Image (cartoon, rainbow, N blue to C red; front, side, top):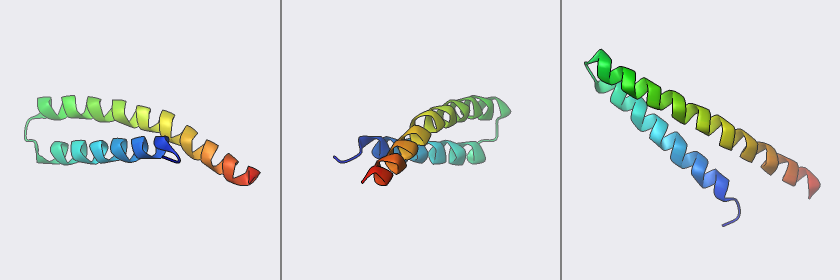
Length: 64
């Protein structure tokens, strides 16, 4: 596996898309609120991991 962080990023992105679809399907504001909280947490994790992965990948490309 060349860069395992990129797989994590695509898994997080897929889970975020699933959560957005669940939010769009729900009729209850209480259920939607729980899902929005989950989405915010996933978004924060995605940003922390994937931005660092992209920065390190681009800096590695510059070295070679």
